[in-house]
Image (cartoon, rainbow, N blue to C red; front, side, top):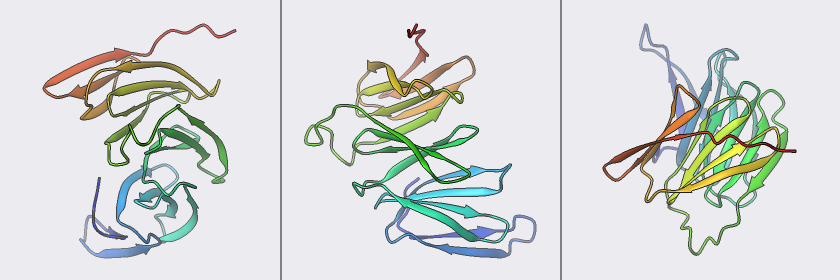
Length: 186
């Protein structure tokens, strides 16, 4: 998702009435994630601000900023909000409290990894997260706070979860299915 707007409009689907206009971002929005059970909306913008919104009343619950000011792609596990920045840094926040739990980063040279590269993040479970940026697909174990494996494919155009602990990766005119690697950590 990429828009030039800095605000969100929440509409009631049955009547078509505008319920709320949410203002908190100072730059165009880049990503949304919705927690239907908690009735929460998470949004991010080009400046790296991530906002928690209560959908029942349109209230801004909290916001946090990426310290580097990069746009953040969002995903969720049952308990955590996940953010992937242009610097290939994976941030993990507790969805309820907003507390930053950890940040994990890959060694990267931003001169070689342009800030405008497309990035993707998918949660396969509470423990396993997959990210993709540039030509690399990365598998993360949140429990061990570790990178499990990286796979080089080519320019990545899309990433989505498959039902059997694997992901589909779209690159050019190809679709690759990559399974979560089995790793024995001691």
